[in-house]
Length: 381
Ligand code: SF4
Image 1 (cartoon, rainbow, N blue to C red):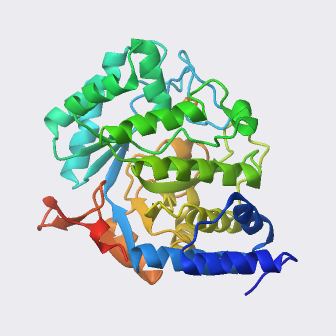
Image 2: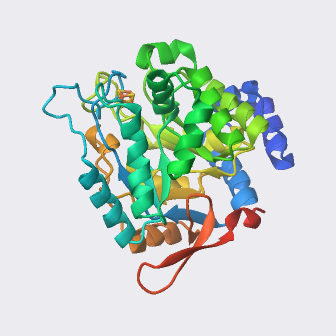
Image 3: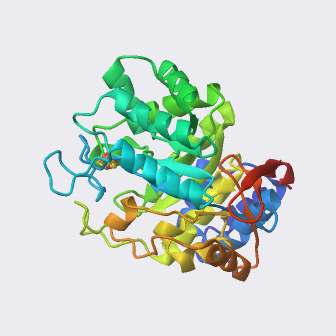
């Protein structure tokens, strides 16, 4: 274990900063990217992870709902989208949407994760209706819905400010925002992979407005495509800056790019080593994020399990009906049982805790009945 390159003194200074809980700079982040070996990163990230979350590893029981894959945009990394007239395109009916929600509720899910394409023909009211009908029928389900790309689209459709739109959605049953659509903020990359959709400033603005209204949200970073280390560090620092301002982010999720069936299919998928390095550096740079998630659907089960010792404290949920990354070639299972998820966490030497979307411990009676228990934020060390 140790430093693999010449900049030993810089890494030694970083070591001391991490020990003392001092914030790392952009230059520190670059030094970690360029000079720290995997085990040094793991040791440092694990220190922060255990300081913030002890030995706990969180999971939830959720279901994904992607109401349509038809999308006006053409992000180069996206294998999920379809053109309006493509045979691959679909648009779920209200009955199909309610069937998915009923299935989730019956199986004891606490959350529905709702994201999708921006359909050329569907009006704003259709997206609002998705949230409303589910909430009316299954009020126990927490609805974590729509990324800033979608909220920005709703602004374009309605010519109304996002604050108004959020208020209408909160009335309809919106619970929080997922972290997607962030990709890589730096324009050198963003302009090449998704130039038309909401840019970095808009992504930030929309999360800021959500946080002001008391909505909590997550944040992501899509890595392993055309970005360079400096773009990743820049991305993390932008998120950290907004978190300083609002405190509204719960969890950061690094997302590994899956190239199959995308316009970037000449790029090789990131290795497990890269996945663990990005996880650890994210934990070290995001000192004001409580949680870092190893999203097993993207990472695969083995890497996700290892990530619990490289900075991650959350492993996402049982995730029924995931489409976006499976369309892009993810070969992880579509679904993982609760027992399987808990075993995976315990094997990694962690203590599994089922959480709800807002990080309350979930207390279950026999069957699928559940209620939100104590706030897990109180367990921060
Ligand atoms: S990533 Fe989202 S916005 Fe981009 S093409 Fe895919 S579905 Fe559309």
